Image 1 (cartoon, rainbow, N blue to C red):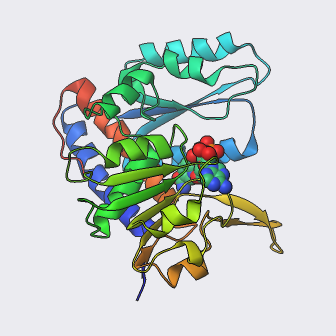
Image 2: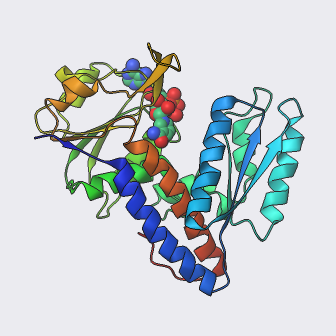
Length: 297
Ligand code: NAD
């Protein structure tokens, strides 16, 4: 029987534990504050920041939102960032991507105070992660690690094939999984759009993580017997639904589950974990800044 890994349930457990940690922080007068920043009015981005605000409310994190006009010069966004860096009530914030074309996202990230960089994208935080001393693990890779742990997957010596080399998923996940640590110690192959013979690399893996942004790229014929399959992809494809589309992963779920020992669904797999880990990082930010020890899940 293939196990369907329930990301919603695991995320909900993590949120419960975070709620306890937040209460302990409140006892020490350290109430966490998260801000979201959105430049422009991209509807998908608006939905994402709304969800992040709602998530905060649910666990007792104070949240604020900053809108920046999409036609304003980059300096308007830099000013908003400088204000958040100086604001003692804000322990962490995220600048929702994508930013408008005239703004250099890398420069934006460089301006975020690394201590408040709860996305974990600042070069200082990337460097610390690679060095095995992460301040903030980026939310999606961290969520994948937690899912694997909850599913009881043994990473020690396991062959992991990651499909995708982005700065927010593939690269940090590869770096986390090779660390000498209980939630690391894996042997990782990172594939990308120029990889030859992708199927050969996925078929020989004990664990496949798909993060390519390519709908149903990986089908059952590319999955070896007993593989654990983690599908990070979220892709809109045209469908005969009320909305005119449906969400599918990077894995063809039905054919892959015939071979997998465990698999995440889309939606309901990695997505809820990403959201929970942003809350986790916010709590971690407060505990580091206020120097209060909390047990993080
Ligand atoms: P990206 O576009 O930045 O990177 C995609 C990577 O996949 C690239 O490195 C590219 O080389 C590789 N790739 C693309 N097509 C490929 C192919 N045919 N064969 C092999 N490699 C290929 O994307 P991203 O930001 O890393 O996101 C990847 C997917 O994960 C998207 O569907 C995105 O929506 C989703 N995502 C989901 C969550 C979540 O919380 N569930 C979070 C982040 C991203």
